[in-house]
Image (cartoon, rainbow, N blue to C red; front, side, top):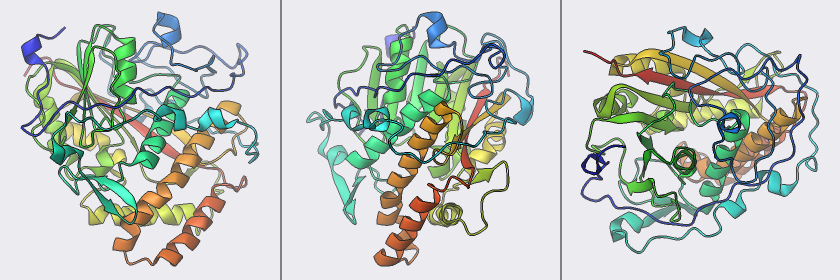
Length: 421
């Protein structure tokens, strides 16, 4: 483990945060694939928790391990992977998602995708500086006051619910993997930038009790009861956020599209990673994809994603930044760059049960995101409330059309700091 004096330090205004630890919702049993469908999960950056005896997520059931659903061949976790571009270790990659599902709301019980139980005990910490605990409100939604305006997404309970749901969706769609960078089996020091509700950092701490994990965010919305090797700090990741130069992994999820300068942040991360250490970016690319040309040109969800590009640009950010991960990493000095991605269905149109569950999560998260963008982004673009509500209703309906086989892409970019030079 790193020396106590090397642990991450907050800036002058940063403090540890506190709320209550969430519990992951239960999930339906998985359908076991036949041997002809499952050549097996090859090694990835993180070993499969079921195979290593690592702690399982609470409430998680046996997972479907079919290669065409979960993971394609991956490099040895202890080896430096080759730079194979987008062909280097695709997860869903070139495999099409077979349609055939129906939009039956009763297929999964509420506990399968409702995350209310995950945040019931959250509460603000009275030990934090008052300026950090203060919030601002816009059209009924709560936003962080600390470094106000840096992150144009709410931090209220509804958004925390949505973020917890997205984390659970990610665990389902990646077979419980937290990362794909080949860290080896004994990471010592890790930081999660933009940690949000802190679930990723907590799970990392559970699985790797010998590691020291720091979660950093603008909002004090993280749990209080966490593994002893996990701590949370409140600070701006786009400012100077820590001391030390010995991190094994710097992790960012759903962050690059809302950064004003991804390259500057990655250059800062580079300085704080040990030689041979890794950075990993996990981000949705903000586009609508289809494998069978079933998305109409005037599809409401597609129009929404186009409008979000405009809305993000008003804040000086790029909604499609996830597509440029290689460019950002190379400019920051990283090598051995790897690219993986998974397909996230918009809705329950896939034939496969696991993919329908993932689609249920993703559709629900997208629907819950509409009030958030309606509170700040659309009014800034000149939309009236009545006009927004009509359009958002069209978007919700569009994601329930089983004839449209649309999906989003979640990209995983990882880069290594050179061992020498």
